[in-house]
Amino acid sequence: MNPPDATDLAELVRSGAASPAELVEDAIARIKATHSDLNAVIHPRFEAAVAEAGEVADGPFKGVPFVVKDLGCTIAGEPHHLGCAALKEAQVTSPHDSFLYRRFKALGLVAVGRTNTPEFGSTITTEPLAYGAAHNPWNLGHSTGGSSGGSAAAVAAGLVPIAHANDGGGSIRIPASECGLVGLKPTRGRVSQGPDIGEGWAGSTIDGVVTRSVRDTATALDGISGPEPGDPYFAAPPARSYASEVGVDPGRLRIGIAPSVANGTTHAECSAAVDGAGFLLESLGHDVQVAQPVSLTDDEFSRHFVTILAASLAADFDGLAGVLGRPLEAADVEPDNWMFAEMGRAISAPAYLASVQWVHAWNRRMASWWADDGFDILVTPTLSIPPPPLGWLSDPELGGQRLGEIMLYTAQFNVTGQPGVSLPLHQTPDGLPIGVQFVGPYGAEDMLIRLASQLEVAAPWAHKTPPLWVGATG
Image 1: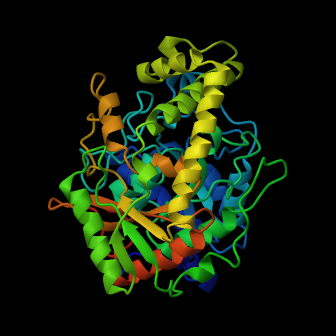
Image 2: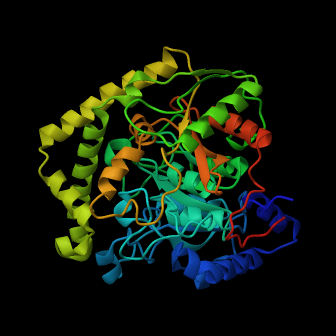
């Protein structure tokens, strides 16, 4: 039998076979047993979770334990350190619950802790100086990805079946890829970031979850979707619930696959993962061809995306000065982030707006591949390499260069706002997971869920567990 997912655990609660308190206490025991190996949960909230398990919302995940990334999704009175040593030292807490956390609670979920994240979520490996590296349960010497790496490690190892994650350049999809999970980045505006944020990184950031099953992802998306008062914009609601799309025939789709791109090097195993997905899709009756948007490899994209990120980080530093009661100094943050923020301070307001306008025009060129060329889905590697060893991306001299070389496929769809999902369809010969990314047109999470569900049946992954697995076995 497959390990139980969140839907299975909620059914145990509904049937009376288990209580929320029993599920929560079981998750706490697993976190304690693996902390020294994984370093995934950095802010336990065990006493609060046990208390909350006595009265949980009657949602689809009633009584199911989960974890919250320590970046966004704030909980009133509890730590919110963003992976930053200065905020840790000052013992900064959040003054209120975020809208997203309220929605997670309405689903019936019980938070048992907050998870490790790189400082400010600015990279794709979870190795913050403030809390130390999160370790991949498939191989403890390798990265979990980032910035939702602590959440992904927790789900992959079986501590909990579902975890909060968010994504500004690949931070849901990349950890899902490196930890063998389902990671769906929703459409821009699908999930409110309020009350503190209207949008992040000029609309590139969005929240979601990492899970082990498509149905858990779909059910969670139903619960966290929809506008909140004061949101600057929101995505149009789906025709029906995302959960109802699971198991529905997606029909014959026109699918373009891009095993590699001309402006970068893709590891052979990552290209093979896409080729394998292409053969599988053909066997399922889809129209598959090697094709990709021309603008996917536009050489100017990275420059404008970096401009937006650097200016945004500089503004974030100014905001954190109000939290700390003093300006941030170089000693307060990691060197790469200080350098990045200084770069942002040197960008003029007209230069920043010029980059925003450039990506708006570029978005339209990208969208034409779906709208005018008639494709339904683009398939790419999620990341251009398998999970790297810890230290490879955090190397003080080479890490930044390496980061630019391997992020070839994800940030583009944060900027366009399109939904994308990483599915665990491949492994290296030595057993490291490799995800394949599927990207749909704006607002088409329903199509992605139908297709992902079809692939989950055709090439099951639920039975695959890492060497460090402490969850139930079915």
